[in-house]
View: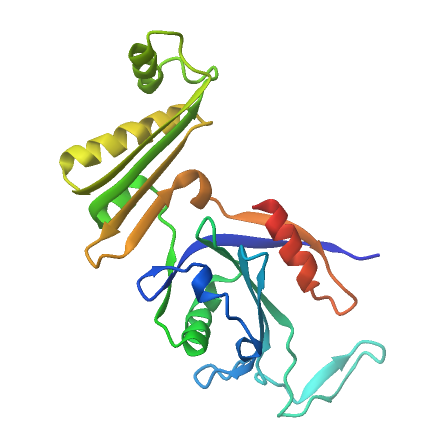
Amino acid sequence: MSEYKSIKFSAYQLIINEEYANLKHFENINEAWNQDFEDNKTHIIHNVICKLKDEKYFLLYDNFGSPNPRPNKVYEINSKSKVSNPRSETQVELKRQLFCLYNIETKILYLNNSKSIGFIQKYLSKITSCEVIIKRIFKNIDEFVKTLSSIEKIKFIAHRDIFTSNIQSFKEIKNIFGIDEPESFTLEANYKISVDEHIRRVIEKFRNEQLQAPNSCLTCVGRDDNGIEQIFSENAFSKSFDIMVAENSEHLFNVEDVFNELIRKI
């Protein structure tokens, strides 16, 4: 019987040539994207497979390993003794697995191994001949706002429940229309203005309301000093999560099973 094991994924941003990666960066995927790649710095051998699924998901799978360390002796379980290592110095066991999925619509990159970020950047830069940067997701609104030089969008979505009786935004919506508080509402404003103390206070106001209302969601879009777009959406980005997938007879995960379960989860 197959044993199910947990795989933990975390979210990142994928920037290609100073913009969020989009469909144009992946629509010409061909065999050149699938390569055996030897990292001269780490001496790790990577067997990489890339594909575009439903014009919505970019998938990268890496089966990798290193020829070293290679002990001269291995332990033989049946004889309970050490014997000569049957693997030669030029052979590599590709027993480590990297799963990378980029949601083109939400612009979120999911990885199961943060230590592979440098490799993914190097590999995609080589394949696309573009500058590729993987950035961490902001964990809180204060950290996000500090990076901004301008703001382009503030969006706040809230749903009425027992937690929202004191939420000021519900009262303001009620005052605008002169009828009862709505079951839910969306406020969205588009800007092209510099970030100042007043903008910070506005963002902080909605951030505080989100803390009071678990069913609300705050999204902000702006640009940093280098003109690179930055997105904050705490509900989508702040959580790492696990998926459960069965191992195969080699005690590795089936690639298709992992990506299907990941897509179902997100």
